[in-house]
Length: 252
Image (cartoon, rainbow, N blue to C red):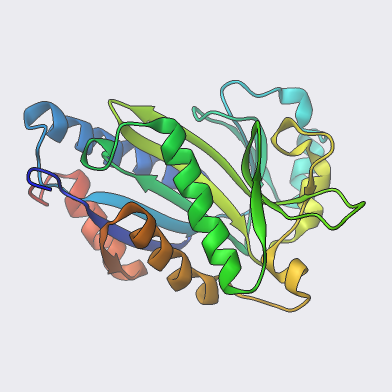
Protein backbone atom coordinates (compact mmCIF):
# COMPACT_ATOMS: atom_id res chain seq x y z
CA UNK A 1 0.00 0.00 0.00
CA UNK A 2 1.38 3.41 -0.98
CA UNK A 3 2.97 5.27 1.93
CA UNK A 4 3.24 2.17 4.10
CA UNK A 5 6.56 0.60 5.03
CA UNK A 6 6.43 -2.98 6.26
CA UNK A 7 10.15 -3.61 6.28
CA UNK A 8 11.30 -5.21 9.53
CA UNK A 9 14.95 -5.70 10.52
CA UNK A 10 15.12 -9.02 12.39
CA UNK A 11 18.10 -8.81 14.75
CA UNK A 12 19.27 -11.99 16.46
CA UNK A 13 21.06 -10.96 19.65
CA UNK A 14 21.89 -14.37 21.11
CA UNK A 15 22.35 -14.46 24.89
CA UNK A 16 21.97 -10.93 26.26
CA UNK A 17 21.35 -9.39 29.67
CA UNK A 18 17.84 -8.20 30.41
CA UNK A 19 18.61 -4.60 31.38
CA UNK A 20 20.85 -3.92 28.39
CA UNK A 21 18.23 -5.37 26.03
CA UNK A 22 15.48 -3.30 27.65
CA UNK A 23 17.63 -0.18 27.22
CA UNK A 24 18.12 -1.12 23.57
CA UNK A 25 14.36 -1.52 23.07
CA UNK A 26 13.75 1.93 24.51
CA UNK A 27 16.38 3.47 22.24
CA UNK A 28 14.90 1.81 19.14
CA UNK A 29 11.37 2.81 20.12
CA UNK A 30 12.47 6.41 20.71
CA UNK A 31 14.12 6.53 17.27
CA UNK A 32 10.95 5.28 15.59
CA UNK A 33 8.80 7.78 17.48
CA UNK A 34 11.07 10.64 16.41
CA UNK A 35 10.71 9.52 12.79
CA UNK A 36 6.90 9.38 13.12
CA UNK A 37 6.81 12.90 14.50
CA UNK A 38 9.01 14.17 11.67
CA UNK A 39 7.26 12.25 8.88
CA UNK A 40 4.34 9.87 9.54
CA UNK A 41 5.04 8.02 6.27
CA UNK A 42 8.72 7.53 7.08
CA UNK A 43 10.65 4.63 5.57
CA UNK A 44 12.71 3.64 8.60
CA UNK A 45 12.30 -0.11 9.14
CA UNK A 46 10.68 -1.48 12.26
CA UNK A 47 12.81 -3.88 14.32
CA UNK A 48 12.25 -7.35 15.74
CA UNK A 49 14.74 -8.50 18.38
CA UNK A 50 15.22 -12.17 19.21
CA UNK A 51 17.16 -13.00 22.35
CA UNK A 52 17.81 -15.44 25.19
CA UNK A 53 18.25 -13.96 28.66
CA UNK A 54 20.17 -15.18 31.70
CA UNK A 55 17.65 -16.18 34.41
CA UNK A 56 15.50 -13.18 35.32
CA UNK A 57 12.03 -12.56 36.72
CA UNK A 58 10.23 -9.48 35.38
CA UNK A 59 7.17 -7.81 36.87
CA UNK A 60 4.84 -5.68 34.75
CA UNK A 61 3.61 -2.28 35.91
CA UNK A 62 0.24 -3.65 37.07
CA UNK A 63 1.69 -6.84 38.56
CA UNK A 64 1.73 -7.98 42.19
CA UNK A 65 5.19 -8.24 43.77
CA UNK A 66 3.82 -10.95 46.07
CA UNK A 67 3.73 -13.24 43.05
CA UNK A 68 7.50 -13.57 43.40
CA UNK A 69 7.74 -16.39 45.95
CA UNK A 70 11.44 -16.09 46.87
CA UNK A 71 13.49 -13.36 48.51
CA UNK A 72 16.81 -11.86 47.49
CA UNK A 73 18.78 -14.75 48.96
CA UNK A 74 16.67 -17.23 47.04
CA UNK A 75 17.27 -15.33 43.83
CA UNK A 76 21.02 -15.32 44.47
CA UNK A 77 21.06 -19.07 45.08
CA UNK A 78 19.31 -19.62 41.73
CA UNK A 79 21.58 -17.18 39.93
CA UNK A 80 18.52 -15.14 38.96
CA UNK A 81 17.62 -11.46 39.14
CA UNK A 82 14.37 -9.51 39.50
CA UNK A 83 13.40 -6.43 37.46
CA UNK A 84 10.31 -4.21 37.58
CA UNK A 85 9.44 -3.07 34.07
CA UNK A 86 6.95 -0.92 32.18
CA UNK A 87 5.04 -3.50 30.14
CA UNK A 88 1.55 -4.77 30.84
CA UNK A 89 0.95 -8.07 32.59
CA UNK A 90 2.16 -9.63 35.81
CA UNK A 91 5.29 -11.63 36.64
CA UNK A 92 7.08 -14.03 34.36
CA UNK A 93 10.43 -15.76 33.94
CA UNK A 94 13.02 -15.46 31.19
CA UNK A 95 15.98 -17.76 30.86
CA UNK A 96 18.12 -19.91 28.60
CA UNK A 97 16.20 -22.18 26.27
CA UNK A 98 13.41 -19.63 25.89
CA UNK A 99 12.89 -17.69 22.67
CA UNK A 100 12.18 -14.10 23.71
CA UNK A 101 10.94 -11.83 20.93
CA UNK A 102 10.62 -8.06 21.13
CA UNK A 103 8.82 -6.55 18.12
CA UNK A 104 9.42 -2.81 17.99
CA UNK A 105 6.95 -2.05 15.25
CA UNK A 106 5.45 1.17 14.00
CA UNK A 107 1.89 -0.13 13.88
CA UNK A 108 0.95 2.89 11.80
CA UNK A 109 2.42 0.94 8.88
CA UNK A 110 0.40 -2.19 9.72
CA UNK A 111 -2.81 -1.39 11.63
CA UNK A 112 -3.66 0.58 14.75
CA UNK A 113 -5.42 -2.08 16.79
CA UNK A 114 -3.77 -3.41 19.96
CA UNK A 115 -6.24 -6.27 20.37
CA UNK A 116 -5.47 -7.47 16.84
CA UNK A 117 -1.74 -7.05 17.49
CA UNK A 118 -1.87 -9.35 20.52
CA UNK A 119 -3.95 -11.92 18.66
CA UNK A 120 -1.48 -11.82 15.76
CA UNK A 121 1.45 -12.48 18.10
CA UNK A 122 -0.47 -15.45 19.47
CA UNK A 123 -1.18 -16.64 15.94
CA UNK A 124 2.54 -16.68 15.09
CA UNK A 125 3.21 -18.90 18.10
CA UNK A 126 0.28 -21.18 17.30
CA UNK A 127 1.57 -21.65 13.74
CA UNK A 128 5.14 -22.19 14.96
CA UNK A 129 4.01 -24.93 17.35
CA UNK A 130 1.82 -26.46 14.62
CA UNK A 131 4.98 -26.96 12.56
CA UNK A 132 5.98 -29.51 15.21
CA UNK A 133 2.56 -31.14 15.24
CA UNK A 134 1.51 -29.40 18.47
CA UNK A 135 -2.04 -28.08 18.66
CA UNK A 136 -2.19 -24.82 20.60
CA UNK A 137 -4.98 -22.37 21.33
CA UNK A 138 -6.04 -19.16 23.03
CA UNK A 139 -8.09 -18.93 26.22
CA UNK A 140 -10.65 -16.14 26.52
CA UNK A 141 -9.50 -13.50 28.98
CA UNK A 142 -5.95 -14.90 29.22
CA UNK A 143 -3.35 -13.44 26.88
CA UNK A 144 -0.82 -15.99 25.64
CA UNK A 145 -0.81 -19.43 24.06
CA UNK A 146 -1.92 -22.70 25.66
CA UNK A 147 -2.10 -26.39 24.87
CA UNK A 148 -5.38 -27.87 23.74
CA UNK A 149 -6.06 -29.90 26.87
CA UNK A 150 -7.00 -33.55 26.76
CA UNK A 151 -10.28 -34.41 28.45
CA UNK A 152 -9.92 -34.06 32.21
CA UNK A 153 -6.56 -32.24 32.00
CA UNK A 154 -5.95 -28.51 32.47
CA UNK A 155 -4.35 -26.56 29.61
CA UNK A 156 -0.64 -25.77 29.87
CA UNK A 157 0.85 -22.39 28.97
CA UNK A 158 3.68 -22.41 26.45
CA UNK A 159 4.01 -18.69 25.69
CA UNK A 160 3.61 -15.56 27.82
CA UNK A 161 3.09 -12.06 26.46
CA UNK A 162 3.26 -8.50 27.69
CA UNK A 163 3.61 -5.33 25.66
CA UNK A 164 3.86 -1.56 25.79
CA UNK A 165 2.76 0.82 23.05
CA UNK A 166 3.63 4.50 22.71
CA UNK A 167 2.38 6.56 19.74
CA UNK A 168 1.55 3.21 18.11
CA UNK A 169 5.16 2.01 18.39
CA UNK A 170 5.36 -1.26 20.31
CA UNK A 171 7.93 -2.68 22.73
CA UNK A 172 8.34 -5.77 24.91
CA UNK A 173 6.66 -8.84 23.43
CA UNK A 174 6.55 -12.58 24.03
CA UNK A 175 8.47 -15.48 25.55
CA UNK A 176 8.10 -18.92 23.95
CA UNK A 177 9.36 -21.83 26.02
CA UNK A 178 11.41 -24.05 23.72
CA UNK A 179 13.77 -26.01 25.98
CA UNK A 180 13.42 -23.88 29.10
CA UNK A 181 14.17 -25.19 32.60
CA UNK A 182 10.55 -25.05 33.77
CA UNK A 183 11.49 -25.43 37.46
CA UNK A 184 12.14 -21.68 37.57
CA UNK A 185 8.40 -21.08 37.22
CA UNK A 186 7.78 -22.82 40.56
CA UNK A 187 9.18 -19.74 42.31
CA UNK A 188 6.49 -17.40 40.99
CA UNK A 189 2.76 -17.26 40.34
CA UNK A 190 3.19 -17.21 36.55
CA UNK A 191 1.40 -14.25 34.99
CA UNK A 192 -0.52 -13.95 38.27
CA UNK A 193 -2.42 -17.18 37.49
CA UNK A 194 -2.22 -19.66 40.40
CA UNK A 195 -3.50 -22.50 38.21
CA UNK A 196 -1.08 -21.94 35.33
CA UNK A 197 1.02 -25.01 34.48
CA UNK A 198 3.92 -23.94 32.27
CA UNK A 199 5.22 -26.12 29.47
CA UNK A 200 7.65 -26.01 26.54
CA UNK A 201 7.92 -27.33 23.00
CA UNK A 202 10.49 -29.88 24.15
CA UNK A 203 8.30 -31.07 27.02
CA UNK A 204 5.26 -31.46 24.81
CA UNK A 205 7.21 -33.39 22.17
CA UNK A 206 9.17 -35.49 24.64
CA UNK A 207 12.43 -34.65 22.88
CA UNK A 208 14.92 -31.81 22.73
CA UNK A 209 14.21 -28.95 20.35
CA UNK A 210 16.61 -26.02 20.14
CA UNK A 211 16.00 -22.31 19.67
CA UNK A 212 18.12 -22.55 16.51
CA UNK A 213 15.53 -25.00 15.16
CA UNK A 214 12.54 -22.85 16.09
CA UNK A 215 13.90 -19.41 15.13
CA UNK A 216 13.53 -19.59 11.33
CA UNK A 217 10.06 -21.08 11.64
CA UNK A 218 8.97 -18.27 13.95
CA UNK A 219 10.43 -15.57 11.67
CA UNK A 220 8.67 -17.06 8.62
CA UNK A 221 5.31 -17.01 10.37
CA UNK A 222 5.95 -13.50 11.68
CA UNK A 223 6.55 -12.36 8.11
CA UNK A 224 3.41 -14.13 6.90
CA UNK A 225 1.08 -12.91 9.65
CA UNK A 226 2.23 -9.28 9.47
CA UNK A 227 2.75 -9.31 5.70
CA UNK A 228 6.21 -7.96 6.47
CA UNK A 229 9.39 -7.81 4.41
CA UNK A 230 12.01 -9.14 6.81
CA UNK A 231 15.74 -8.53 6.62
CA UNK A 232 17.70 -10.77 9.02
CA UNK A 233 20.93 -9.90 10.82
CA UNK A 234 23.15 -12.37 12.67
CA UNK A 235 24.35 -11.57 16.19
CA UNK A 236 27.52 -9.74 15.11
CA UNK A 237 25.79 -7.83 12.32
CA UNK A 238 22.81 -7.06 14.57
CA UNK A 239 24.93 -5.11 17.03
CA UNK A 240 26.53 -3.14 14.20
CA UNK A 241 23.18 -2.39 12.56
CA UNK A 242 21.47 -1.41 15.81
CA UNK A 243 24.31 0.88 16.89
CA UNK A 244 23.91 2.72 13.60
CA UNK A 245 20.10 2.65 13.92
CA UNK A 246 19.85 4.28 17.35
CA UNK A 247 22.58 6.82 16.53
CA UNK A 248 20.52 7.80 13.46
CA UNK A 249 23.14 6.64 10.96
CA UNK A 250 20.45 4.40 9.42
CA UNK A 251 18.26 6.71 7.37
CA UNK A 252 14.54 6.48 6.74
